[in-house]
Amino acid sequence: MTNRRANFINMVKHLADVPEKNVEREINLTKESPYRQGYHVESESGSLGDPNGFSYFNHQYHLFYQWSPLAFSQTPHYTQHGWKHLVSKNLVDWQDLGAGIESDTVLDKHGTYSGSALPVGDQLFLMYTGNTWTNTESEDDWHRVPYQVGAMMDKDNHVEKWMQPLLTGPLEGYTGHFRDPKIFKKNDEYYAVLGIQRENLTGSALLVKSSDLHDWQIVGEVKAKHEDFGYMWECPDYYELDNHGVLEFCPQGLESQGNKFKNIYQNGYLIGQKMNLKSGEFNCGHFHELDKGFDFYAMQTMRDTKGRKILMAWMGLPEIKYPTEKYHYTGCMIFPRELHVKNGLIVQKPVDEIKDLYQEEYDSELTLDEKLVEIKAEENNRRDIKLELDCSQAYDTVLDLFANEDNTQHLRLIFNHKKQEFIVNRSNCGIAIAETYGVERSCHLNLDQKIIVRILQDTSSAEIFLNDGQDVFSMRVFTAKDNHRIFASSHNGSAKLRAEIHQLRNRR
Image (cartoon, rainbow, N blue to C red; front, side, top):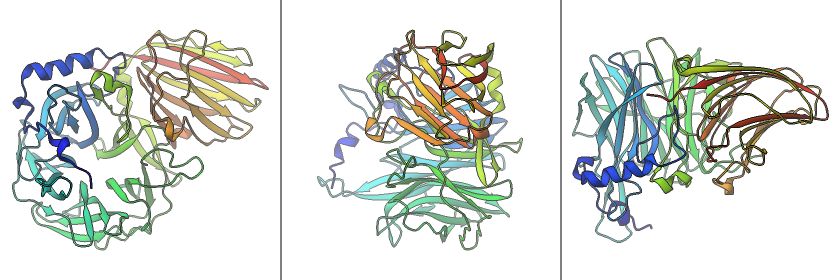
């Protein structure tokens, strides 16, 4: 077994326990990064991970996230872990409230892991996994004891933890991998789904319920006919949308199949009839990837007062090294997306509030051929790009983003009419990332007809929406600041392209 002691050297309960100069040193180094995003949420230093407690409460959107601001600190290295807390009126501009929860009790002393939130009366109920280990005096025989912890936050954003655990693991028949509760309410009962690993090292989702938030009973595993589907399911989320039941989760341990399941860990959903909450029976279809890109994980949804189902996710992956670590930080969030069901599949689009970021607009109408054409835009990569493309008369059409002047460096988008396929390739786009898992991602795309493409571009990321958001590709890219050009061309035939580009301001 792994010697975990090094993970907890100089672990502090609160960030305030660390000398202020050490914290400031990390923040100042992060500020030097050329890859800082313009409008996507990032940490001011250290690591940002799973979105947690995504909710609407007290007339504001609340977003917490996994937070280790000193993750890359040195001489000395401090360990601090918790939830960062942000609030927003518009899902665009976020106010940083600092630590929402820190690992400072016997129930979460080795880590405040992921969880969720639900408004209850005039308070916000938080439910999360507290990670602890026993037998820590040994070199390598530590044993995980996960607690599911409850807490209440008042309208002043003060969090009071409950010191009686809601559930304690490991449960009989399962390992200590028992985490990430996602709470919801239906018919005056509270429910939560949690990721769990069976003793035979296969993953599942566990359904639990409560009438008072304190006393929780186990309903059982979600019965979705996916009993042997990876060795662990992380970050499950069950919700009902457009008269369908949806179970999202992140299965670990899947082998790639063609152009599917190419990342180190996967993300996706099962969709079908509404779940029987008395038994956990869930009549659903096949597993679908929610995002087919290189960097997407740990998604979580919430419903706001407008009735919208909104998705947030980490634009990153566990165990992948990103170039920002040089500047002592890593990770960012996707831009929030509104979800719907269309033809039995989840479709996604950026929330309409993105218009609050709009500045200059550039419109182009082009006929493309072999000659490389530059599409007009400002000299920065903060953009909302909407394309109407007809490449039915060409072999393929190519769009290059993050391009340098001679287009030898770029993020390449290929619309291959001959193969009826969309391909995104980042092999020539700056610093290489996770090449072990490939440099291309792709999907089938009907290019006999005119298509609509939407791209959210930022300093070091791109989110690509195809087929009205049925196919989405999210990715990080780390290229030179001057690589801000957009080029297009078509091969073995002509193509028609209309582009509407909105340049975006930085978030406040």
